[in-house]
Amino acid sequence: TANVSHELKTPLTSILGTAEIMKGGLVKPEDIPHFAGNIHRETERLIGLVNDIIKLSRLDEGGGLGQWETVDLYEEARAVLEQLAPAAQRKQVTTRLQGGEALVRGVPQIVEEIVYNLCDNAIAYNRPGGSVTVTVEDTAFGPRITVADTGIGIPPEAQSRVFERFYRVDKGRARKNGGTGLGLAIVKHIVQLYGGTLTLESAVGRGSTFTVTLPLAKDNA
Ligand code: ADP
Image (cartoon, rainbow, N blue to C red; front, side, top):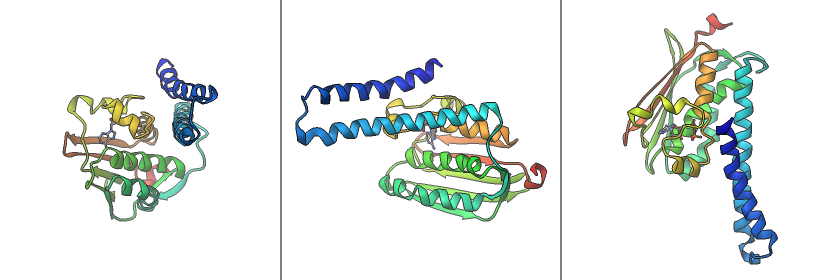
């Protein structure tokens, strides 16, 4: 609760400060878009944060998550990469999808959450000219998605902590990326709920690879 309050307070304080300056009539008309932009950005961050908190509490309760269906991880990855294409372009990161169909049983929105968060991070924590390779395979252990990036990497001592709620390796950079600090906590939670496994391999300055293996579709019908 203390963490959540702190995370909510930072953008709220910034919005309040900006609104006070504008209210006081101290802002020149030509500067209004800049100040309004601040309020807009911080409000978007707050909405993202509240949405992630709601997702996590639903996962904590373990129910009410929607209708289970058969989802193709490859199709899901294709759609997510398409959705993230503008972000990748802005960061000058190329994305690649390889492999083929791998069917999982789950709630489509929840499966998307795994794929989206991993790909979003792989782009956000990359370097200009870097790349993201997403591989989808049907293995003997179950459908598997691997998201590998050539980004900044994660130091060994932080590798288990990145899955904790609100933990960030570099607060400044994470804030600039507009992240909530909850993405990987949500991924880990879902993978556990679905009985899958999640592994991370990373080297600072070289990149990170996240691998999620979900149970075989027939075992989870
Ligand atoms: P955030 O919203 O801050 O991205 P996440 O829970 O998704 O929150 O990730 C937690 C932290 O883990 C990030 O702030 C970042 O420091 C680190 N991280 C996550 N993914 C990557 C990655 N692919 N490469 C390097 N660091 C990463």
